[in-house]
Structure formats: structure tokens, C-alpha cells
Image (cartoon, rainbow, N blue to C red; front, side, top):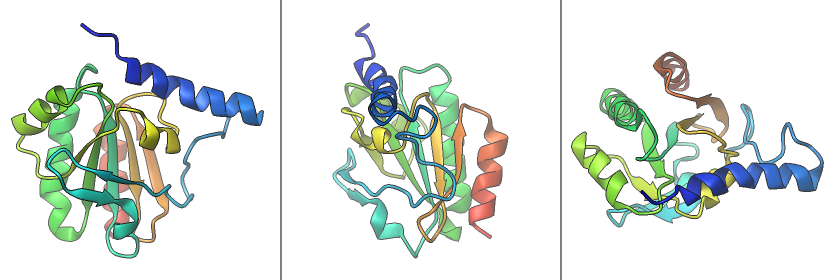
Amino acid sequence: MKPPHTLVRILAIPALIAALSGNALTAGKAQKGDLAPDFSASSLDGRKVALSGHRGKSPVLLFFFAEFASGSRKDFARLKDLDDQYADKGLRVIALAQDEEKDGPVRLASSVRARFPLVLDRDAAIAGKYGVQALPHAVVIDRSGRIAAVVVGSDADPLDKAVAQVLK
């Protein structure tokens, strides 16, 4: 198995930013209340994905993951459930794969029949904007474009509560 170089880069980016800025606690970390850093990318099925296109319209769930990470299949199935449950209430889900190759994330998305966009963030450019240091890493963004919650790990309860809160 090829070493997960992207994960190494993800872990190194916030540390480098913190070292350069002298602030190890907040450097490179998008936090609750912050305006969510914008990005534009193409999904693996060719759709254009721009976070700014949702501002003022829809809450967004960004989900950073890697197919090679343990529990990714269960986490991705939960993500699909959230999309199925709340898409008609306005929630937009964007999955951001931190894998080197697209094959694994595509298989994972296909296995649960995901309909939301899947972006390959191979160089961790988007993950770096959000201070992703561990996977999975979910960012719940309200309609105004502000970060309502950051949930790191696979515990479904905090993610469910954060999504319910932005849909009120």
C-alpha cells in the first residue's frame, strides 16, 4: 500500500502555519463563528463546486475524509443518510477526499449511492484552509456562511445536533 502522503501534508500544513505565525492554538484553524473560507473546485463527476454559491441560501456540511482511514465506510454511509434526510430542507453536503487517487473515494461513494458532490482534495489546499488535522473532519456552515460547528471524529451525535441547529 502506498503511504498516505496527503494525510502527512494535512498534518504538516497547520503545524507550519502555527510555527510561522507563532500561534500554535489558532493558526490555520477555521473555528466556530468564523466566515467559512471559500473554495472552488470540480467534483469527480465534473460539477463545479463553489462554497460561496451557497452563502445566503443553504447550510452546508463539508466532510473531509479519506477512503483509507478506518471507519470511512460507516462515516460515509452516515453522511449519505444526512443528505437523504435533510436535502429537501436545504442542507448541501460536499465530501472532500484526502486520498492520492480517486478510485477509492469513487468506490466508497458508489457503494452508498451518494448523490452529493465528491471533490478530490489531493494537495490538501481546501483542508489547509480549514485546519484539518485528523479525519474525519466535518464543518457545519450556516446559511450566512459562518461556521456553526466543527466535529472531528466519527461520533454521530454532535454532527447530528449541529446539522439540526443550522436547519432551524
